[in-house]
Amino acid sequence: MLRYAIKKRLGYPQEIPKQKYNGCPVPEPPKKGDIDMIIAGFPWYVSMWLLESSWVFITLSSQTHSGLNMFKHANDPKSSLIFNALSYVDEYRPKMVYFENVHGFLSYALNATQASIHRLEGGIPMGGLKLVVRALVDLGYQVRFCLLQAAHYGTPQTRVRFVLMAALDGLPLPSLPQPTHHFPETNHLPIDLGTEVIRPIKAKNGTALHPFVTIDDAINDLPWFDWYEHDIAN
Image (cartoon, rainbow, N blue to C red):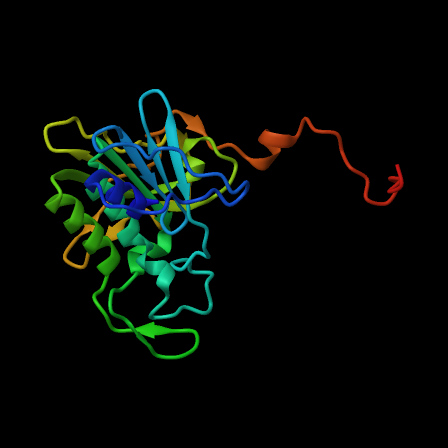
């Protein structure tokens, strides 16, 4: 889709891509300058939002940076989807950018080598983060990033995610969202950059207005399900 949009803007002849679910040609791509915000959850999806309508381009893949991935590959092509997300930013120059990934993205080392079937070694420490920040700054964006804990914002689960926000130079860069709900687990939120440890999210006792939401809080009004007495046929 990005190649199609660029060739169309430059006036090169190209075949119009077809939609997989019905075989029809895709609609006209957004024009440069039309996009207000790009949301990218690499390596999962890229969404581009306009003021009155939206265009969504989705790329599905496994979580290459997840700590639960037991079979990491040094040359995993899905890791290069970072470049795809940055290419969309370079082409459309949105006012704002929002990137999200698993906590393990901070450990993604560029040019790592395959040490074993389960382990990579070497490479540039935190190379993925350094690449994204450097690219966005070179493209003229201000950048903020942090680790967020879902339980700090009223979600009944513990889940840590890497989040990066960027805005074009001269535009307001939003502040990072500070916790609204107190949650005692904060060990994973500091980010060790090697030269210093940053703590952009303040999660000390007494700083959040509400207690965290439990699973019981979220679903205790649902009817109880009896695994032994229910009738499967009905």
